[in-house]
Image: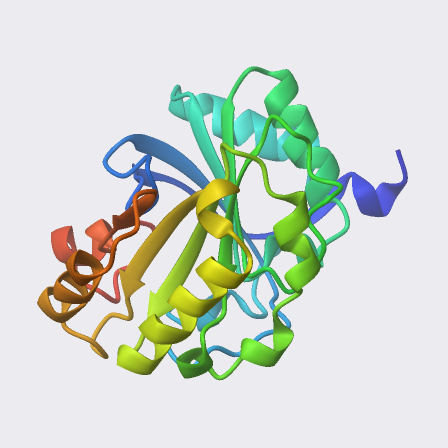
Length: 219
């Protein structure tokens, strides 16, 4: 393996409860990588854009093992912005972890090991980054994957519904709707979700922001 593929710049590795997705509430080790080519309007991890420590895959996996839990998520920033992320995901899956990756969807996902569950964060108009969506990623989704829409207003919700319909997303993956923290009220999004006739959908909150302070790191 090339050196650049066996090393990653890591912002933090920590144990917390999984705050989102269908795994919400389950203890999870988060590996947050440094760097992101996007600048979403509501980004809550700008601290991970630059600072980090270069670690080998072996060093990362040794830290993960110390926590003693089976669920691991690779996140960012944008984890796929670093070439070594693909091989790390495969190595974690080889060790029989349940592996998640949260990715913006701006970079190709087809090389991700099929054992990894992808959470594809499609960028809505309100994010300011909609033009970065790589729509060919939809064709690479598996039934175990999830597509997340962060909603800032009703226009975002309607845009998401159109994409779900036009791309047949309900048949490809699980659908998640998440209110952008501080921009749309959860009860408003709940009413919108209940008003539509979709079956394979879930509304979620960022659980960690309600348990701890929204700005607290390492949770």
